[in-house]
Structures are given as C-alpha cells and as structure tokens.
Image (cartoon, rainbow, N blue to C red; front, side, top):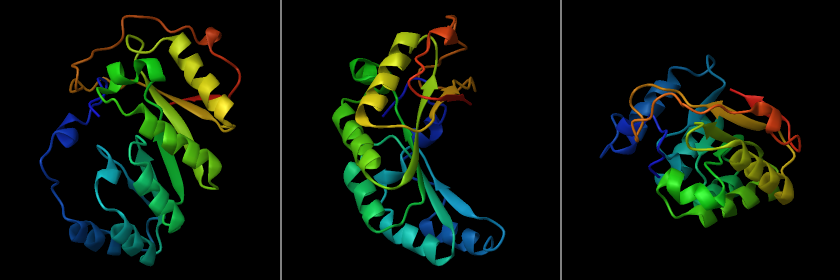
Length: 193
C-alpha cells in the first residue's frame, strides 16, 4: 500500500531494514523481565516470514501484537493457527468504494478476508481508521461502521487523527475540512486517538 496519509514513507520505500531478525532477538533478550510484549508493525509486517521470528519471541516469554493492513490473510491465518499472536490491530483504511483511491492498492478483497477471519476467530483485535478529513468524510466512516456491524464486529472502533509530520506519502497537510462528529453512527462505540 501507499496510503496518502502514511508518515512512514522511509519504511515503505526502503529496500531493506536497518536490523536483522537476529539483531532484534538479541535486543529482546536484554529486555526479558522488563517488557511484557512486542509490537510487529511496519510498513506491513506480514510481508516478512514471521513464523520463526514469532516462535523465538514467544520462547522469550513476550506477548505479540500485530499491526496490519490485512492484505496477507494467509500469513495471518498461519500465525493464528500456531497461536503466535495475542492481539491484532487491523487498519480499516477506507470503504470499498474509496479503498483504491486512499491506499493505491486494489486489494480490498484481501483486507475483507482478513477482517472476516478475525471476526470468526477468538483473537482479541481492534479495527481502526486513520482519519484525514480531506480524504474520508463522515459518510465514509459511517459506511465503515455499518460494514463492521453487519459482519458481526461488536468491539470498540478506533479513529486515529492524521498526524502531520511533514513527511506523508502524498505530502498532506492539516485538513482544511471540518468533521462533524455529531453525525457519526452510534452502532459502535467510537474511541478517538
């Protein structure tokens, strides 16, 4: 994905990482007893083969949270089947009609499969959307809420305000449009971040 509001462009466009998996495991070994868990995020963490890495993290006694865009349902299912994840934060980037426009990816169906997988599983997870008022409207967010509810999602829905770091992929600035929160659906409890 190349989401317009993404401020991790240095990670998204990087050819390789700064640290090897062994470097990260060596660091985590120094934190046993000091940290409770590890968050795997990105870019998109599931573009890497995470099974062996997660198994090593679990051997160290850490909980694992995965932040994901949901475009790799096969990898997520494998991690769930092996009980390697403790929590997932799923980015619901945009309603189907705007998914390509916002993400520059024509992979809504993969995201949709992951969302269904998580709803049907027993994993603790959250759905969240990053909100830039120039990109998503109240109607768009209400469409997402309706879709989540229709699928059986009954947890809190998180709205994250766009963070203007000056480095977003689309060079976005603070939104010029207002967002009338009084028009948001009450079908789900909304939590602002």
